[in-house]
Amino acid sequence: MTYLNLSYNMFTSLEKFPSIMPVDHSYTLDLSSNILEGNIPIVPTVKERNELMGPEGSTTLDYSNNSFTSVSPNFGKYLRETIFLDLSKNKLNGDIPPSSCSARRLEILDLSYNNFGGMIPSCLIQDNLRILKLRGNRIHGILSDSIGEACVLQTLDLSTNYIAGKLPRSLSNCRDLELLDISNNQITGSFPSWLGVLPKLKVLVLRSNQFFGMITDLQENGQIINNFSSLHILDLASNSIIGHLPQGWLIELKSMMANNNDDGQIVGHQTNMSQGFYRDTVTITFKGFDIIFTKILTTFKVIDLSNNSFDGLIPESVGRLSSLHGLNMSHNNFTEQIPSQLGNLTQLESLDLSWNHLSGINLSSLTWLNLSYNNLTGRIPKGNQFLSFPNNSFEGNPDLCGSQVPKQCDNPGSTTTPRASDHPESNSLWQDRTEAILLFTFVGLGFGVGFALAIMFLHFCRIDGWSRKCFCIHM
Image 1 (spheres, rainbow, N blue to C red):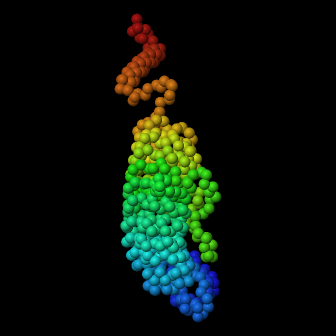
Image 2 (spheres, rainbow, N blue to C red):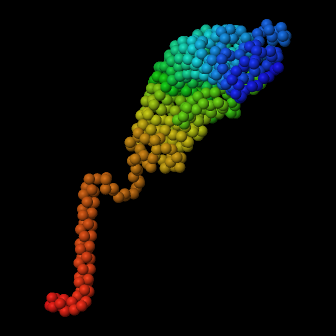
């Protein structure tokens, strides 16, 4: 047997299976998306396989999306020929078995969305491992700083855990690293500018940690080293980074400029598995929503610097990042006018500059915009695009006027009739006019009623001899 796919069924147990399942010398076993419980099933050892089948092969195991709760402590010794292991989205707990270091041929390991605790075995970021995903567990402790120059990691996703301490500088030895996501942890230290030297780094997500200090350029002999030149997604949101955003630092983001000849490839990795291509995923905030991108295109460019303490001017050099699709600088201390160079961002779909101290607006085409709670003044443009934004995109700017805010604009160059509520003296004028109108109304009503009664009286006087009496009375 070389391929067994039992995925997307309703299997609840493997009790009919032997604990060690005889298979061919290279095989794939897919048990994903069932309701399997208990202990993770094991595979033949190298010795048993050599006795049964001869030369060693390669194993692909997918047990994801089940309800497995435990892993045998010596599970790793059964993985010596495994190149792919996916245990994500189960209910596994305890520490990651140290025996996993025995899986010397393992290239892809996904333990995401379980209840693993303890520390990460340092051996996992060594040897042949190319993709390590531990997102959504309870892993704590600090990261080992003993990553060697032989590191071949391409994807490292440690997000949503309890990892503390500093990001190890030896991570810069992973020259093939394309995606680094350590969001939602307790990692501290200054902004890791040294990651900028990684030539293939496309996705960097550091949100919701405890990074502090200022962003500075890496320089060598007075020259700025190419910083983050391959970045497509940069997320620094919800840290404690302060100070001005350097003009020169943004200019180094070459892949976010128009002339990068990007052909729109999918961020991922070619493998020897039956699927062929393994896609990376990432969760970022876009257009105000947290979105899980299961397919990351290299043409999709986003920067999120929100919820920090950046101050000063928004650098004009941001206008050179003309292939940006999303820019979020909200909840900072940026001041002065929004630079007109933002108009060069013709691909921009989402812009959030809310909760700053900005005082000017000069923008064009967008599909999502948030400028709330700044110091903006003047008229909101009347173009169809601005009318499509919700009113809360502009709230908290008392000096803005337009149809989207309570304050309405005066028409320039024309005389407008003042409203009764504009000046106190106009109130008394309207009151006098009202009284005059009421007076004439009642006078008119009185005259009309009297005239009608007189006609009726004369009419009745002509009936049954009443006319004489009426005449006498009249005389």
